[in-house]
Image (cartoon, rainbow, N blue to C red):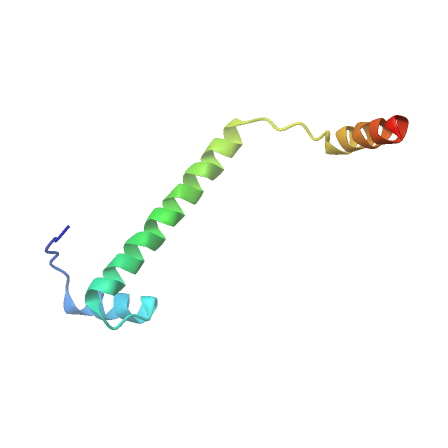
Length: 72
């Protein structure tokens, strides 16, 4: 998809520097990809705060080890 974006020259220069891309199109694409990844991470963090996790991994591991030992 082709899109025209009006950016101030200073903004584009900073974007190219931060992304280490000299091609303006690649700099914008890389910045957008990074933004999307960041937003997805933030949403996962928000979701994880809504889920209560049981801290019972040790008990589960112990039960699994006992089951393996009893089965041998």
